[in-house]
Length: 242
Image 1 (cartoon, rainbow, N blue to C red):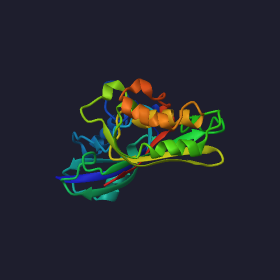
Image 2: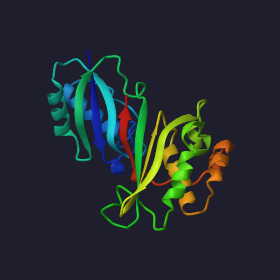
Image 3: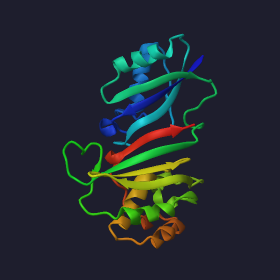
């Protein structure tokens, strides 16, 4: 038995997220179908993170077990030859059988793109926000989110678990001529927490919230205290660290 680790990128627009769902087109469902066709055997593909409907990936990591002796390049090429155009395997490698793409991950990095100019060519991959945002003020809010904290206020109610802590290692906005790009790295993320954090920080940038309110929102442990959840099409799983 051999453990194969793959790095994937995908356009999440036409997928109902990563996880298999009955009668829904999902990344896991499409990928497993293609790998099973190649191997002629039922397999399970395990991902580092279950991206939501409409969320993209630049560096999703997954693993699965095979019994065949195919080399990594053959496996990658065979899968890519049968995948649809919105999924691509960037790399494949054999790894220790104890490796688990989800449980062994040390951190995950997401980016979110906010477009400053409306364009039909960006609507699948960025959220258009037609108002001025104060990036410096938003980054002050980011500083208050760093470290290990309870992020109950930033998670949707259905995701509420016993452990609502996240350890945010870095979190910041940077600006280009046409975009505002948010990047965040943490040990784990609660359901829709990244997009809710962004929605809250946008309130800061539009001067509809004060920096001191970030601490109040964290302490409230109540989803109603935070901002709106931004649309999924601006979000990308950029990288998984091990």
